[in-house]
Amino acid sequence: MNILDTFRYARDAVTGTPLRTGLLLLAMSIGVAAIVILTALGDGARRYVVGQFSAIGSNLVIVLPGRSETRGFNPANLVTSTPRDLTVDDATALLRLPGVQRISPILIGTTEINAVGKLRETMMVGTNHEFVKVRQLKMGLGRFLSNDNLGHGSAEVVLGAEIRKEIFGAENPLGKTVRIGDRRLRVVGVLAEGGQGMGMTTDELLIVPVSTAQAMLNTNTLFRILVEARSREQIQEVKASVLKMITQRHEGEEDVTVITQDAVLETFDKILGVLTLGVSGIAAISLAVAGILVMNVMLVSVTQRTAEIGLLKALGATSATVKQLFMVEALLLSLMGGFLGLILGYTGAAFMRQLYPTFPAYPPLWAVLAGLGTAVASGLIFGVMPAKRAAALDPLQALTKR
Image (cartoon, rainbow, N blue to C red; front, side, top):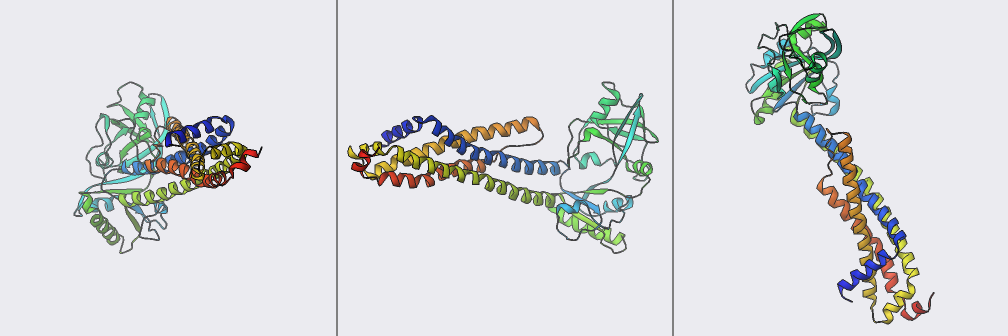
């Protein structure tokens, strides 16, 4: 029996029992689809986090108030302990360091905007004119904040796209006066729509000079200081010099945490990479279960087709040929289940992207190949025992068995 006849026989055996075949395909496809969808979620989370941090800007060193317990970055460093104030003077001093191209002090709080009879609560960011370049933001209308001394900000505000839309609609807001908290500020610009970073959309922000924000929030401390190095090669050098200068300014106490953008990305990339592998392993277990199901059904099939096997042997088929027939049948079932699972998995991932357009739920190629390969391998491995049992049947006894 040549290879073409073998595949025809296996095809007829698969299509001859639609209910059994359907159940096997369902079990196998669920396992493969689970791998595709779960890895799409895991890898999508990794891409999303990396994209959010990349959107902050490039070549960044971030200064946080408070010292973490370890020098390396971990996600807990985003909320540090025993904080000591970071000030505008600290930020200004960092500009004198070699390798530092720009600095942007950050102060965040909530406030209200009141204009043309409309009132809305929103998030306010106090910063300087360099913020738009450090964060790589784009302007939709007008300009960004003036290049003023950090301690003396102009009475101006930049609106997020959504804030502009809700307050002014299609009307041009440039030059108009709005009340922010207890201050009257002039609108000088509107950010382009769709700005992202660190899970925060710029569409919902008001941006004012840092000194204005400090006066409104009655505080002298800063939330963060963003420091942009002149090149990627200078990031570590800038990080060390920033920590040294802040420590000197704080009377020799190392009471800040200095992290680099690359360290943040690397850490989250590792964490989410391990998570993706973990969920892939969990999903692979379902494929092992499906493989056991293939074995059980094939064993039943051998029992039901005893007379057929005896006839094949009586017509001259060798034990190796019979074994090959059952192995090809198991391979066909596994391949069909695997490809059906890929279709279901890609469909599920596409559905998630429709629900959450900003979440890049794309299954990685290695997961797709691993899912299909595991399906085929499990089908073949668990198909060995039924194939051996069929090949071992005595043709005379098989023909007389009913």
